[in-house]
Amino acid sequence: MTAYSGRHFLQIPGPTNVPDRVLRALAQPTIDHRGPDFAELGLDLLQRVKPVFGTSGPVVIYPSSGTGAWEAALVNTLSPGDHVLAFETGHFATLWRDMAEGLGLVVDFVPGDWRRGVDPAVVAERLAADKGHRIAAVMVVHNETSTGVTSRVPEIRAAIDEAEHPALLLVDTISSLASIDFRHDEWGVDVTVSCSQKGLMLPPGLGFNAISDKALAAASSARLPKSYWGWAPILEANERGFFPYTPPTNLFYGLREVLTLLEEEGLPAVFARHARHAEATRAAVRGWGLEVLCADEREYSGSLTAVLLGEGHDADKVREIILDRFDMSLGTGLGKLAGRVFRIGHLGDFNDLTLAGTLAGVQMGLELAGVPIDPDGLQDAMRVLRTA
Ligand SMILES: *Cc1c(COP(=O)(O)O)cnc(C)c1O
Image (cartoon, rainbow, N blue to C red):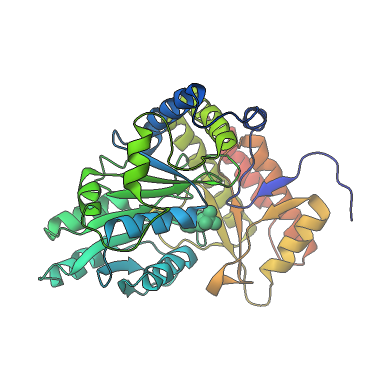
């Protein structure tokens, strides 16, 4: 085993680097989750997490990965045999589709090329054709972490409204929340799914559902089997700051610190920081003479960039060299993109020099792997970073 000095660069698009302040917060003693101190912590978190989702409604927190929060969104709002509309934007959208089918839903899966987001025109078309209102929900992955493509949720909402269709809008914000602008209430989202280890800068282990009034109403008649994931007992216990089963207390300490960090910086500044780092990253990719996977400039992701390599070059080989030589982890190509792309995560606890270091490591790795690139890429990124 090689010994490395300095910090490991964890530049995968989640889990992300956990800030020192958050690591210290996590290290406090675990307390009685039925006691008065816990109630205070619970009530504080359940209130302060709402602005991060852009909601004034309830946010349910699970001890789970993001996948658990996906399942919770489906089982609380839908019934066996319900039809749902989903879009093949990439690997995560495909996995969520698989889950919906596994739960007994009928999925209308619109094919995609993994370089674009959900087309609002197709949403409008599919819903307009559904005269009998059989489609109970539209499932959208806001930021496709496998491709670095961000779907335009407000336009998707407008398409649903234009079709005057009653379907629920379920949105996965796992790699966009607290990195890319998202507004649960204003955008008319019914269930927002998220988790802790990406933009929220925490270790894995918390899943979230933000819930609209319409979704709550749907929950009262939804018949998919549920127990652990059921919203009702959680919402009831949450009124007093408690949870029906043992919550991940130490992750809650971390979440409290993350909320303070986000409040200190302010969400608009957080989003602007991510957008700027994404722009600098794309400048590097173009400067190197390589291709950004995302094919539509309206859909560039603020939290990660997927880089497409030309024929004959193995993206995993490049990642391996970078990990070995520079102690930096980059995201692998998932599903259909295996070996063809690598992904640079630039979300969470991140600043200009973290990005400059990351891109320098990528450039050196590409050179060592024998991928022909123009070394001006790094300069192009630094030109973006020099601007205020
Ligand atoms: C990471 C991710 C998931 C899966 O989350 P887990 O915590 O691994 O279960 C789902 N959707 C998106 C968009 C993701 O980025």
